[in-house]
Length: 398
Image 1 (tube, rainbow, N blue to C red):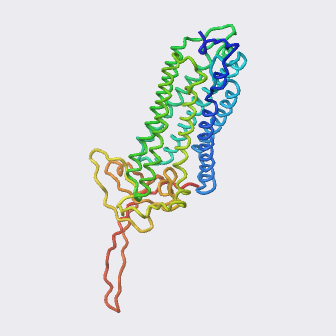
Image 2 (cartoon, rainbow, N blue to C red):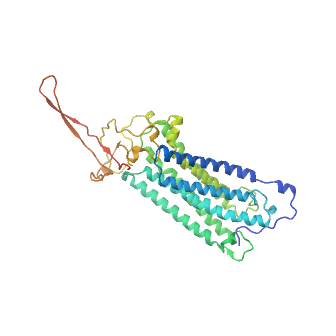
Image 3 (cartoon, rainbow, N blue to C red):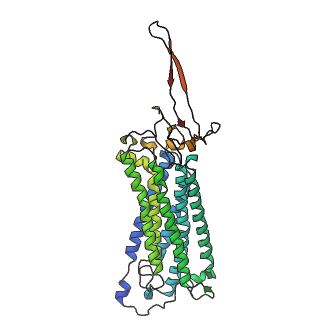
C-alpha cells in the first residue's frame, strides 16, 4: 500500500476549487523563516570567524544544517509548481509524481540530515563550553545524547531507503513493488519526531546549571535565559508536527492543508536561529551595551557542580584574574572558560583532590611571598604576605 493513495484528477474542476490555494501563504511563511535563519547563520560565521576567531566544529555542523535548510527550501519551491497548496483532485498525475518525489527527499534532507546536523552543532557548542574535567558528567551526558541522535538518524535513513521496494515506488504509484502500511510508517515517523523533540528539551536544559555557576551581570543573565528559551519554540513546533503526523492517515486533502513537512521545516529554521543566537554575544554587546561588570561582585566566576561531602576552598582573587568582559564573552567561547586567562574558582574537596600539578590542564598554585620592610634606618622586620591565590589554569589554545 502506497503512502500516498492514488487520487485521479477531476477532469472538470470548478473554477473556485482551482483558485482556492494556500500556496502563497505557505511559501511566504517558509521563505521568511528560512532567510531569517540564513541571516543568523551568516552572522554566526562572521562572529566566530572574524570577531572572536574561534571558528570550530560546531560552526561547521551548523553550516551543514544551513545547507540542508537551503535544499529543503528549494524542494518546497519545486512542490509549489506541482501542487503545493492546491486541492488534491486538481493536481494532474504528472504534477503528483513530482510532488511526491520532492516530498520524499524533503523528509530526508530536513527531518533527517538537517536536524541531525543542528543537534550536533548544539552538542559540540556545549562541549566547547564545558571544556574542563570539572564538568565531566555533563560532557558524558552530551556525548551520550549525540550518540543517540546519530543512531536514530542512521536508523531512519535506512528505513527511508527500504520502506518501499523499489524506492521510487514512493512517488511512482504505477510502479511494480510494495510499500509498508501507512500506519506503520506514521508510527516510525512519530517515533523519530518524539526523539528529536526530547533531545531539544535536553539540549535546552543542560546549559542551565552551567550558566548558574558563572558570575554574570543582570543583563547577561536575562540575555542567556532568553536565548536558552528559544529552544522551546522548536520543541513546540515538534509537538505540532507530531499532532499532524498522527492525523496524516485520516487527512484527505494532503496537498492543500498545512502538513507535516511544513512544520518540520519550520522546526529546523527556528532551531538554527536559536543555535546561532548563542554565538552572537559579541555583536549583541556592541548593540545593547551588555557587560558583565553590571553584575554583583562574586567570589567565584565559575564553580563546579556540588558534590556530597564537598567544602569550599578559601579564595583570595587577584585583580588580574577577572572573568572575560565585553566582546570577549559568549556562552560557548569565553576566554575565561577556555583558558586564555586565569579564572578564580570555588573548588570542592572532591575536585581538588583530583587536580594534578603535573597536568597542564588544571594546576593549583599556592604562593607565599616573604619580604623585609625597612623604614628610615630602623631594623628590617620580617613579614609574611600570604597570597594564597587558588587559580585554575586551563590549557591555552595555540
